[in-house]
Length: 118
Image (cartoon, rainbow, N blue to C red; front, side, top):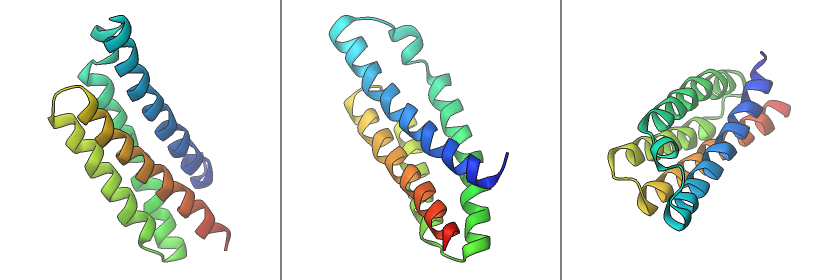
């Protein structure tokens, strides 16, 4: 898979993560459904691991290629926020940290794609 495809995959995974966070809160809080698997820590740990691997491969390679450090810094901030979300209890705070983190990571991937095209 090429770096550009991996950047796009990173953006898609970030979006899916944000949808998962919002849907989990709504389904569990409003309907009482799916808490045992939607809030399973393994989902979050695997998601973070995927984000780290894809981000390191694509954004790291992008910085090497285009020489702009901004996407790497922004991606690192996003991954840090996502990691911090794993330390707290499930709920609105965790979702807010995670969504802020995935927004930063997705933006870093978008910047990486744009800088690649210059």
